[in-house]
View 1 (tube, rainbow, N blue to C red):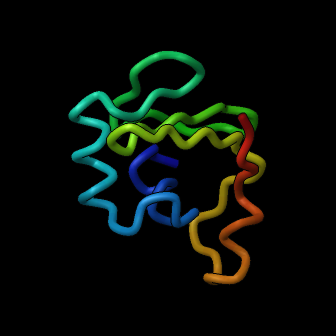
View 2 (cartoon, rainbow, N blue to C red):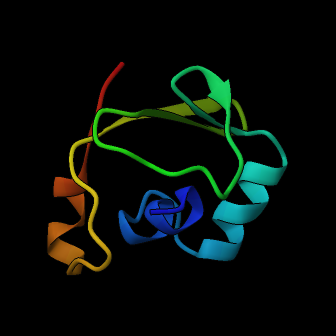
Length: 80
């Protein structure tokens, strides 16, 4: 699944267009490398998103095309 779609489906970022813009601006890294919106997300990838002066770090646990809002948290785990 594309990175921008994964960020939207997992609800780490609210809208896909915002996720796409964040990737284009270089604020999203996967496994320590700046990632494009078209990056193919796999289980075990570590995603970092820079929100201003705060950084969100998440590890991919599952990849699914669609999930219910309540189950979105099962797709990733936050870590430090």
